Length: 543
Image 1: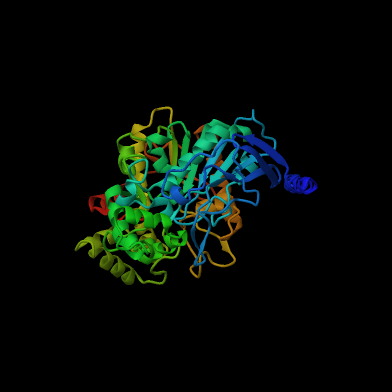
Image 2: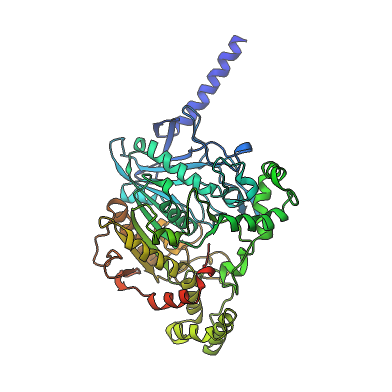
């Protein structure tokens, strides 16, 4: 028996040494040794680090719990499981998914004090992950710009954002929802405790998100709970309207998701028990049964505000106390350096209605019929603001209309409000990008080839390793242009270039495209005033 135990212990030790022997770096953290592997030419990657305990079982609809000291906190197989989501029509991932990844220059030491970039992935709060997702991964900032980079998974969909009155009583906060944002907060706390061991400076952290990741970054910026956890915010194409009141969210989820689920008809404690016992795959599939969000609303324009959206960020009076525009208007946000952006044709990504070949009459008739649904006579006014002659293609014109109604005008207002409340030592930059993609190979996301500056194109170009599309030479140049500006901002909070000026100076934007950016005065003043005067903030485009 003793001989058997000796052999068994030897085999266990040998297997562990075999794993470590193919790795190049070891970093000691609060929860033990983290193993890294050389990647690229100058970077080391530490993948699949557990930053919170599994949100499973009795902890499904609860805030994340910190990892205990001494707990095994790395999944050596790679990035760690993604959070549950639909992938190619099938449920993928695991509830045990709260992992993050770190990339650092291989020369980094505990005294390097390098800037830290924390990437928050997008995906509508229902898809993607901090590993090699549709966006690619952000390690290029570590490889080429000498900083430490972190990405994380966070809970998605119903498991990440379900708000229900029945769940409020079982949550220590007294509210429900926003679990995915609480996960992001937990990862930032992990960064504060551990990033110095990887060469990073915990007092020099930038959060960077795109799409729903950018909405998350703005929500973190507007939250009292994030004080001291980061020092700059980058928000690319943020759907800042991706938020509901807690009351509305609870009502929508009850009559939408719950009534379509296997918990239909249950209330109170019986409903809570049912939700905790439900297989996680049902939370993924039921989104697609009940949400009006996916479809016309996502790729086009509805004729009325919709209900039964899949779970959104909520004003829960715990994490966030008011809408994002109101937070920035009232000065209730972390006073950090800000960089905000959008693409001029965000919606050119699989539009609900392709109108590339429309005549001038067809284009005008579409606009008139669409907007007269909102208010009689409104269509002619819209056409005067977006006439056929202003665009090289009617698709481009309609894309700009939906973009302005959606992220552009809301971000424009949010930025103006932020500028009024930022102290003089903090900067706010805006860029708008009309850069057209130069796509090689198959068309992006199916059969429609995006022709204009579509949603996600700037982040694809910045990372330059996305599996979704093969970048052309001009795309790569464009990505480098943005990345060089972002790296300056991440390191200093400033961008030293004649083409970049803080927004607070004369309401200036950077018009960002190859061959080079230029400064312009606010290009959306008249149009955004029109949409605001006609009550279109409630139709905000969300992604």
